[in-house]
Length: 587
Image (cartoon, rainbow, N blue to C red; front, side):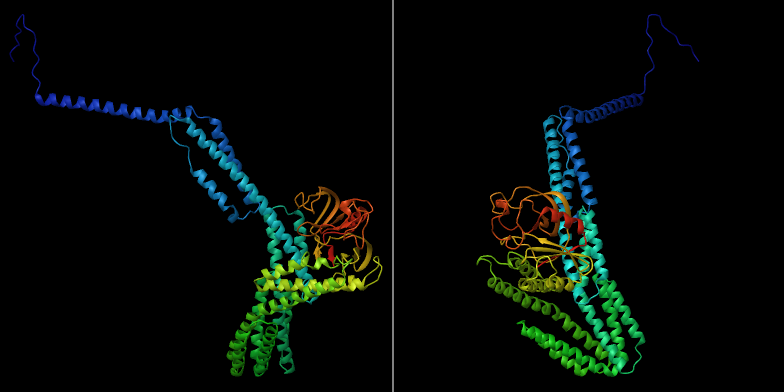
């Protein structure tokens, strides 16, 4: 290798770089520059994203968002309370939908206008507050509605129990249902409590109204057993089944219980018919005869029976063809269908006929026994009293159970009016046992326990324990426009030291100032009570009509607003000697 010769006075020149190497260096530099700029842009974007909400919130008032959150929390808590106390989900659905729409909304995004955000939260808080108030109203109205329904059901059950008991049907188990649910009402305070009572009592009422049909089936089975006994056929098993059916019927508390028993009886009846095959024609004829009797009853009541007459003709034709067990099964089903189709019309026709009879008797007797030519002694049975209630009940009936309940109530009203007429002619002193009282106690099987019996002819209250007269005193019942309601009622409430508030507006002739009451026993929904009336001095016959009270107090110069008024001492005695199971009879 030769040495490099350096010449004095000359600078050193580096060796030349290849062109390809220069290009690579330039590309790398450019790439590094772009990467740096991209990183700077990403960092700037992240900083802006973080800063914008802060910029937006800088001018917003945090208190308005807090108020919105508090309103939401209050509403959520009240909703949970409403669900916990049994407000139906269908009732809550509109409020839940509105709340969900609010929950799904959000504040507007505007980094330069905090007022928009404040306005959103203020409006949201207001909307939640409005829903809160609306929900509170729903809770209150639902509680009141379910309370009233439970009380109405208890009254209907008590009346239906008395009616079916008087007809000889087994009511002991359902009487226990009544007693248990009456006790539940004492502690009930929420819709779920009242709904439990309504469901149980509603089932009990339906069960009682179905008892006649089940009893008829049992009677048919019994008649078949009797026929077989006469034919010297062994009926030991059938008799045991029949007795078991009776026990199951007595234990029934729900409609499904009786439906199950009905199916069992139908099966047993078919077995009996098969065993006693040669007597099937006799049984079939009896069924057709029964169908014909019912068609004639409807015809005499003015019901269009053209369709039923066709059914009857078909039944007669089918009866002639019934020779075998299979024939009888088809025949029996057809007859049962025919009878079931007629049942509602039969009850409806009977109820309409009796209701018209009731109105005619009330009107005729009232007109013949007016006081001073202006006042009716039996006004409680007219339209101002239970007359319009019975009309409405029958007019609103749609199911067979509805018509049966209406029929029971009409029969009850007729009996009470008959007792009023008898009491009018009875000159027995007010403080002695009256035969009309005893007939009412017998009719409703109330010879055990305590019962308040009120005569609106005598304006007298008599208190019985185990059928024995314990006490009696004069009272003042409702005025002509607002009479007390005759009927058999149960104790709905027992209260002391309460205040009555007028349901009528100021300026109404029936308005009264808030009135302290010492003793009050509720006997009918709608504010009907037995209570003390210390502002009165006079009680007894005639005080339900306009008169001058010895106190000179104008508020004591007419009858009550439908309550039973009595002196404070007697009201205290009644409160002490009655209880939640005391029956109240007005006639």
